[in-house]
Amino acid sequence: MKPEEVRELLPLYALGALNPEERARLEAALARYPELWAEARALQETAADLASLVPPAPVPPGLEEKVMARLRPPRRRGLSVWLARAAALLLLLGLGYTGGWSAHWLLALRDPQTQVVTLASPKGELVGRAILRRDRAALVLLDRWPPQGQVFQAWGLAQGRPLPLPTFRTPIKSLRLPPEAQALAVSLEPPGGSPAPTTLLGLPQSTP
Amino acid sequence: MSLEAFSDEVLLALVGRGEESALQQLFRRYAGAFLGLARRMGLDSASQEDVVQEAFSKVWQNARAFDPRRASARAWLLAIAHHTAVDHIRRLEARPKPLEAEEEAEAFDLPGAGLDEEGHLNRIRLKQALAQLSEEEREVIEVLFYQGYAHQEAALKLGVPLGTLKTRARRALARLKGVLREA
Image 1 (cartoon, rainbow over the protein chains, first blue to last red):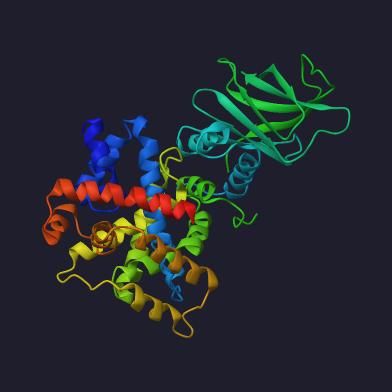
Image 2 (cartoon, rainbow over the protein chains, first blue to last red):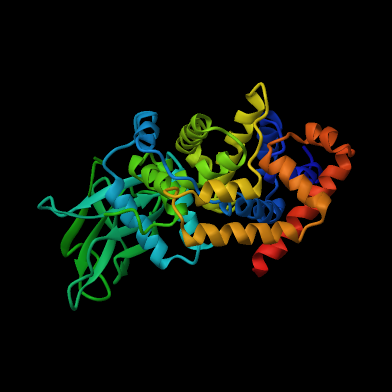
């Protein structure tokens, strides 16, 4: 489908006037033409108003249970609290979802190759998570601020050998892993960082 | 951690990772709207529930495909509900009679159905916005969006060429956008 054909069908798509096959073809074509996304978005927002301004109906008892019972088994378990917290931090720090930094990380969470790694202290206490994208960009999310007079420092782990990465003072930090690093850790350091870790804070654990 | 404070976009990203609790939260936000839309399109109670169940199954299966650059989560979710209702109507042997605005008002204002101020204001807002359209534009919105006719059928029903229908649909949405954003 050419861009002008897609554009011509966008109002009918927004109003739900295509049949399922045409709809699927249009959606597939639209994905290839980012120059049409703003227009598609605006038309769909107006159609959403047509839907959402209709008064809601009371939800019958038991419908929620029926809906939840129909779901297939969850694809992953045990990540909810941390993913939610990661999402909350992105929300607080982000510039909005439609562009900007937080949208990229939200999109990265959809990629099955994105890893979410638990960071735990040497004593086994959970201290945070790291989201590792396939392009080696990483987002570290910790559950605390550094103690007075100290900073966090990230480390790439290459065959267990720590490679010094940037220091940071906030519980959230995006960075890039060097190609030789297979994993990421976090330590507490004096300001300016250190060539070797002083106090290990978070070591990667296998995902629960 | 409660998910109530999260935006729809964040919840959809979590649903895409297989988080049932995020889907449950979206159900609590949107089930009433999905049901209300299906009711406005003339579906009976059993069909309204079928639409809601099928729509949330699609949300669960397709959340990974949601792209916040291409649609807001609200528009994406409501489009899934609307497409589901439309497909349901087109599968029925006899088309249901959609509720007219007045009937809908009566249904909505029945004691016990939940008299809420916001719903009432929204209904007025929608009515006023539709009133700004020409008769022809309003008809296109009614037949395509609320009655769920596919474009070829709608062109026949309205007795206009397909090209005219497309033009009217585009113009009606553009006008509505202007009116609703002003209000």
